[in-house]
Image (cartoon, rainbow, N blue to C red; front, side, top):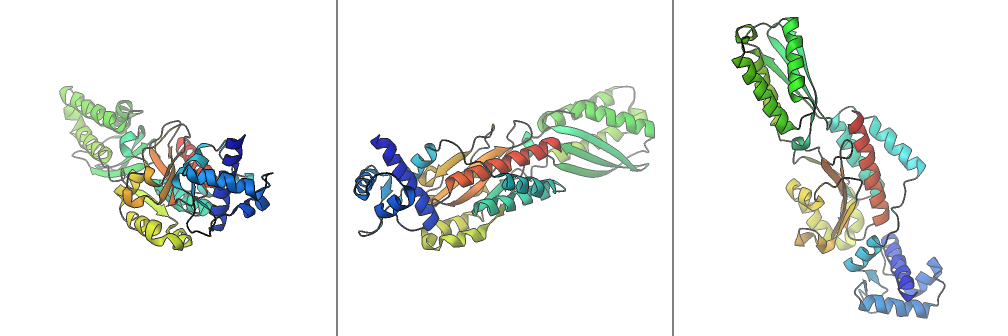
Length: 345
């Protein structure tokens, strides 16, 4: 009974401190939360919580504020992630479904997440190496010029224009398109590149090289080059840096190090952690993160991708005084909508 009551006191302290940004006293807790006990009992519970390291008193005459350990217990004891309201869900859906391409989807997701959480939002672009080939389209621009369109499971589209060593007929174009999709369709990028090379080798050993005129080799080389382009594997979008202005009281300890980290995308990717599948939202609080200089920072993140596959990460970063239930709900909701859009692309 006492443990349950102390957990309720801790939860009330966290909620009040996040909302008011002021240390919380026992009298205020009793008045705001209807704990059903006297201020003296609450003071005793707060003394125990402080002794156990869940809260601390920043000044002798002040109330209490949560520690990283207190935030961790608060997050671990959340029975459910706060659901998004119907209005919020409709807003997310309409905002994201208006996107026209992958860049637009990622940028919209980042802006939306920062607006919902009032934190710094980070969205990693889908990792190319985890993508599969959905379709290869080949369009004749001229008798000796082709447009190659590589469509990936992540929604990413790569285009290449190739000059051919010989003219190509409509029949040969249809045959080439079919062979490319048989070799690469449904394959992971690395496997698709290997299969395309094998297809080109089979052509060179067959009795058709003269008729092909080297066209297959040129096309395969261009597609393999497109599949080997890993520029987006460490590419991220960031939005909501201005939200850090709300934490001016902790500028030196939390905001300044985070502002510096925002300049280094590799640091942010490591801070976000590995993409997690199945809708699992991870929360890393303070010193639980990989960088000591960001020990006053918390991260709420999850993976996203088509189907049940997590191919990239998104989340929010900010000082430990964070609305964890709301941030977790927003991160999960945006990831689900983003995954659905990629799945239907």
